[in-house]
Image (cartoon, rainbow, N blue to C red):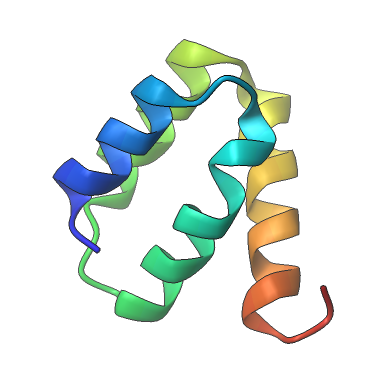
Length: 65
C-alpha cells in the first residue's frame, strides 16, 4: 500500500467504512505519509470520522475485528 493508493481509496469511498480495511493494511505497511492521509480523511469527512476509521482499523490490525 502506498500513500497514493490510500488517497485513491479515500477519494473513491462511498462511506468512511470503505476506507477502514485499506487504512488497516497501510498501518501494517508503515510507509505511509500519515499527515497527508489523515488530512484527506478530515477534508472528506471530519475529525471524528478520522477517529472512527483509526479505531476500526486498529481493531483489524490487532485481530479484534
